[in-house]
Image (cartoon, rainbow, N blue to C red; front, top):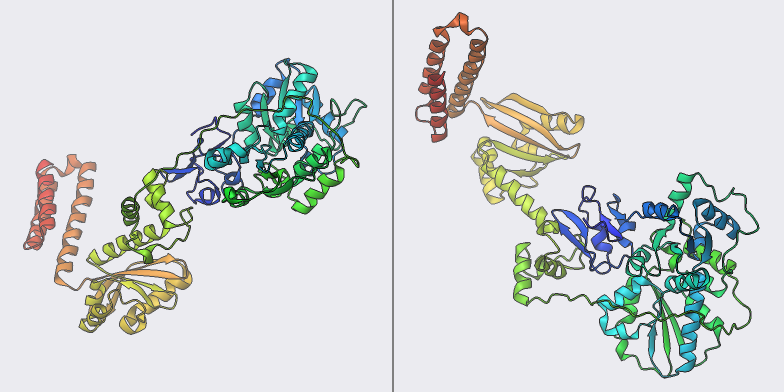
Length: 589
């Protein structure tokens, strides 16, 4: 279990439902011993798995302890507050948010949107300076940056070599307040934790809105009731157009606020899958002017980040951001005031390549012998059976994740056990139609039923009241009342059947086990078991009052063993072994 990565699996909580794998855009999940484990080297930290896990087995690294330690360290800690706080903490004024964070121990609070404005200015300057037809991919979202560099490396050179708004903001804050400060990002993004891990010289720590809510609750701070003061303002100044960044298209609006760019095209894509589809065959695009693509990992933008708790609709959240952002009415000829360039070193993921023979062999392992067997149901978490087979070959999946294979395997095992049982076995549904039975059940009922069984093994669909009417009332009782009927002797057609009827699925499916105790072999076995039971009871008594019984106990056991031997002659090897064991036991005693 990797606790260092921002997302990890609580192994004991994982139910092997594959919901995380099914929703992971890059399949950064490895199934190990029935638990879905995150592969840090492949993970984008997009948080999809955290959001969809029904048992909350996918966890976000808890950095609250590190935050508290930092706030107690004596250093001046400045909060870099993501602009999406407007939609997450609806109705709070900037002064209330600043005062609440100060009460937690922050020395000052600044808007990450200031860093966004620096990035927008740098992009605008690049577009003005170079009108060459080309594609530029935004680098604001760490999820998308990892997606491109790791999984779409052929487009890596198109990503602008600019810092994210959060890192640009860190540079701005250190210029304003000195390098000795500590900067803590607060926002809806899990991937920001990864960004902080990679750039500790700029960003000391990243916590989520969920972490912030927890800190406020534990400190007993209610942001809506705090008493604000005159100096409860964002430093060094409030943001303007950068406040639009948390909605898709917000970065483009920020760039256009800096200058009127007529000779460039703009397009916004949000959501990892939408980004992947949008970038498909990008090299075939023919351009006559620069094209800037704003790419965000969360659909709708950061307002729908994985660590947001506000459940309002995207339209409502978007309106909160747009209406409160102080977007300038006139063009702002802004120039970047801090260094916005950032070199990145991210190695692409090398996907293993398997031959057709290997894939076919892997499909055979899960019972896929032809195209008709490839159901592509997606129950394993992969798009199709071939993709799952490749995951098997790569060692990131287990055969037990294939639902259809496991169902067939379980059915084969159950059928084999039922057919091998020496007693008659029958399973019926709520309409008293046979679901499954073994040959012994048919033999007990007579040659006519055996013929039916041979014609249709298992006799699925046969009407119980026609083949075994004497059992019908017992099945009805179990199906209607739910209680089991155990070891009931039922007389029918001159024979006696020891029968147990048990509920398999309450009110829907029940099963019965029958044994004809009028058969000589069964009678002999019963007498043997009864004699062995007497021996066991007798020996228990002997142990309690051995000093009174003396040798009489041993004589009684010898007599009973003689009865067993007389009935066991001609029996199976297994019976002989049991008799020998009894004799050895008596001699030992």
